[in-house]
Image 1 (cartoon, rainbow, N blue to C red):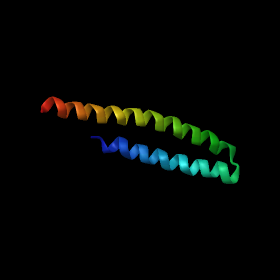
Image 2: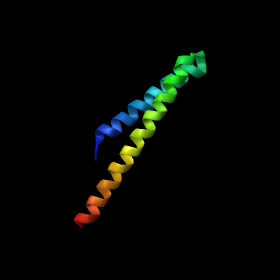
Image 3: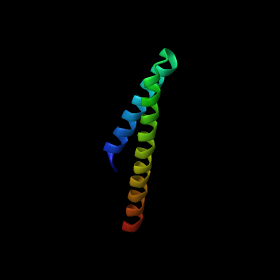
Image 4: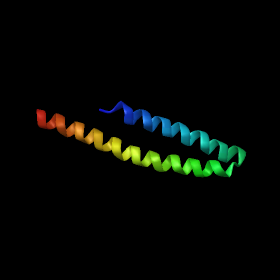
Length: 64
């Protein structure tokens, strides 16, 4: 399994959290755009990670 994808997901979650906080607490409008971008990237990474997990599960099933 790919720890790289996992780390990218965790990084995007952190990015989203920081940008959302800037938007919510300080009203920085540019942060809203960056927060939405982080969520879009997160969505792509989650789909990729789900596929990696499913492929690993299927590989183990085929090997057994």
